[in-house]
Image (cartoon, rainbow, N blue to C red; front, side):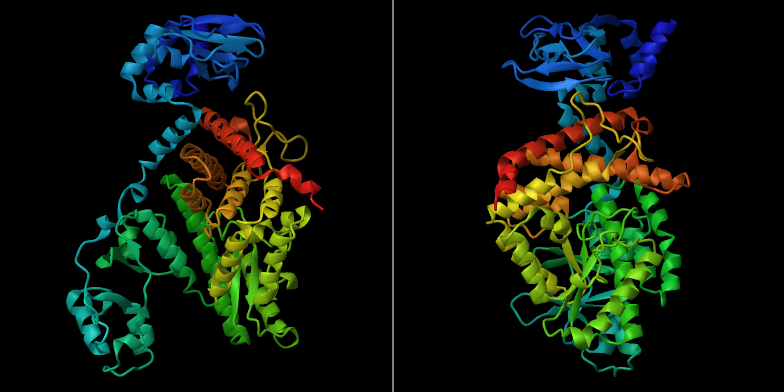
Length: 625
């Protein structure tokens, strides 16, 4: 092959769909190419004219138009155009014009037809639009992980073992021994149909019965866990894993309607979940001091990398990391109470930001607060809660969760307040919105109670859901703040990079990617009155209200997933290379596949921000007195 053709082949092999072609097919493409040069401003394709070529851009940029003359897209190096006409009747459907001096490879229609017939990936690529290609790329990735494609019923190996909730302790132990199970379901049989009332496990028998030397005739109802956490038979295995992580339980009854289909245990999921994040959480709760927790924390990054290498999706990874972070926090609170004594009044420890959204990764800091019972008297009680907050905050720092630079932590007295004060905070933020105040309090609209009286947090979620949806002024201010961070994509679909400083020639995938997405999704979710916190769950809630079209929701979901996965992989590669992970990416470190689809994803974010500006009129917020 001539040197010029080798150069063409090497260039095309970097970009989809040619990067996945078999070598003989790529050789066939390169052998029939014609090279054409277009000056800036010159037409390339005219509406309705005959077209027998697929166009591949070697350098330069091209504008694609709708038949109305409206700009449809801009494409650059490594991208193709002209495919839609070839798929229809070989008539130009989208006119094209060179935006700048552009070098193009023309691929004959006969070669295009041959590739379309003989290569499924090529056919998929040219048949669907940019954002649909993003969905296609994610679908292929998801299919590679059994945790995300297998239903939880696959783990059920036997019928559930149950007993009436009126049995005695010794009888319950005998049934579990005879049946060889580690959990026994306890049923309320007083109605027409038996109803699941509780569950007892081997661990419960040890800690609640044997350690307390309870008599064998003790009613099992005295030590059972009432109203156990359950899952539906239709969910996937990864959802069961996240449920166990979030609630620190090792057994889950699987429900089909009101009937128990079976019980799955932690050991069942570990057969699939070799990342061992469930075992890591279990190990956290066995530690008796901060030194032990610090030692266990070294395994967090290993668990993260294993999940990435096994093709877990971003929701699974973010939820697992948040579950691990919650577990460190909860164990520190338990140890703190052992050290300081029982709390003088009830309280709730509240997670904020990415932990509350189940979107935490390994590069993260602390964002938390305390809600205290309204019987709280600062002069009598605050010394205890300050000491507890400091014990937890310092312990988290030891375990790799750095202090919040904005001081949004329970150690700050402003964020350690009784419930009535928190209700006043949220009421003021919503009823009397101010741009700067909301900018600093955005994080409080992602909240989750993780320890203590978690119903306090539920009350705040209810207050926000009821008040925010009906307050256009508040939503306008929130939307204005959500537009402060824009995706790093320029006018010509090129990446916009940082200038100066140690992050020069990079873009930040959190600040310019997942951050703007979670911000705008939050606005829509609050406008819908949703109580959901996770961005994917918020998108589901938004879909139920029809505020956004299904296609727009799908585009947002795919963009969030793809940007998150690129960010996650960037951090995992840094860990494997022995570097400190971060969120700053250089375009040259990304594969052509990642670069191409990131541009698609960033375009989705840009379009979504335009709709946010139209929907909530944030420009008016700055003029409101």
